[in-house]
Image 1 (cartoon, rainbow, N blue to C red):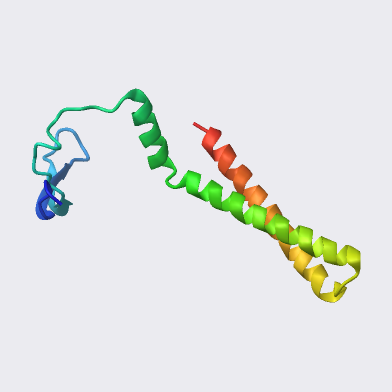
Image 2 (cartoon, rainbow, N blue to C red; image 1 turned 180 degrees about the vertical axis):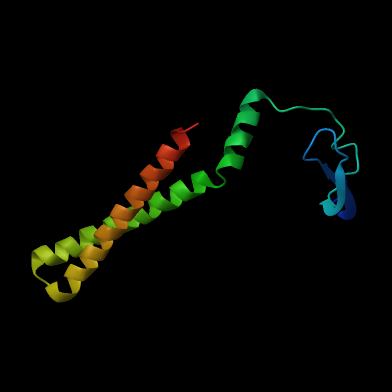
Length: 127
């Protein structure tokens, strides 16, 4: 990884005072500081467009939201297909003792995925 130097440990001085006319009490606190060496790649001075910046900010606030929504949709579709198959078995009267719990499980999966997908949608609309 060009442009990065290893993390260095330094002491950070923190000062606090409880009263304005008293002397400050200072302590040194070890801090891990990451340093970036300037290279021609990161020295260019390019800035993000407002749209790119907004997208990056949204992704930082809720990482992998799109992936989660895709997974909820895929699992919900899978549960719906399974529920349809087990409903057909129930209507045909084939192996009702095994098909009924499986149908209930598939409906539970669909309900959970719909709930989680809607929850993500509400969270994405909030500022």
